[in-house]
Length: 399
Ligand SMILES: NC(=O)C1=CN([C@@H]2O[C@H](COP(=O)(O)OP(=O)(O)OC[C@H]3O[C@@H](n4cnc5c(N)ncnc54)[C@H](O)[C@@H]3O)[C@@H](O)[C@H]2O)C=CC1
Ligand SMILES: O=C(O)CCC(=O)C(=O)O
Image (cartoon, rainbow, N blue to C red):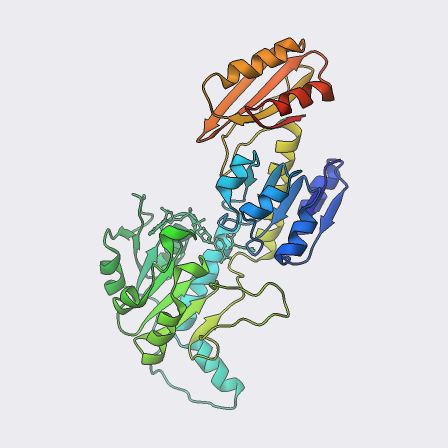
């Protein structure tokens, strides 16, 4: 039985995909769970679906012995210990483009609102003040947008910003094709000094930790604006608070936080709460009806294709083997330690059990190798148990 456990209110389109394929053992959770409850919820799960708030660390992955694959129903995968998952033979899938546009639209909207000081003015009107003034309010047209991380989202933000008349510059650690009239800026400090609005679109993780700290924030233009809809670890929030309080920055929009509440009734704890011209949103950059429905379907289909065929195409942490029709009477999925002779050992074990290999595909990545073998012959649980118990084997499953 394939038990599927979905956390964090994943869109019902995911469940529809599984049920249509005959997979009915599905448990859904509306939020992420604290570690102990999460470990219990993972017990017996073959497929797990999460979004950004569920952290699957090495300890949890080691305990989840039945786990075959993980679906991140989002873009970011930094919430999963990807290397440990790979070493346990567990591929991780995501939806790399499904909410790109949603994030880009929100960021451009925020840039325009902040340039006009709308958050502050909105709040004033709600509190009975009618101070009709143009002080500190600017058009987006002609202003410079500095994008840090010019990947799928960053480049989409740039395209939308140009349509609003902004000049776009970007900084990326890799060489990128500039779209429209966007211009690369090899030096981060140069970009910061030139930009009226700076927006971050880098992945989370150690390499991007506190890219925006007291030093880099000080390098931003006086009166400029900072937007972060990437990961909470990328901005030093205390340094941002100080720069807003001193007036060095005129506004900010923050969608992601170093520590985010786990559920709807837990308040955000942040020094930015109550600050003027600061937009705080609950990590909803990618949360639109369109994106969530697409993500639900896309990631569920990737998990399903893996379970039904073994294909790992699109996995972010695993040797990728593309989809192929089953060619024999059965298909064996074998993850092994990437050691010399592993393929020979596997093939010999199959031969010893009377299995004739019709087709075989191997890919390796770091410490593991992954082989899909289509075989003729009688593949029963005994054969799979023998393959599983060999020291080269990480995991072995029958399709
Ligand atoms: N707020 C939200 O709801 C959402 C947030 N995200 C976050 O946005 C991030 C970016 O998403 P995509 O654009 O799809 O990813 P992507 O992988 O297409 O682009 C990331 C870019 O950042 C660059 N980069 C990496 N390290 C860098 C550094 N130190 N300095 C400058 N550039 C660097 C990469 O070379 C790449 O071009 C995701 O990893 C995720 O964490 C994604 C979707 C929704
Ligand atoms: O929808 C979510 O929970 C997370 C969105 C996000 O940050 C992502 O896609 O990386």
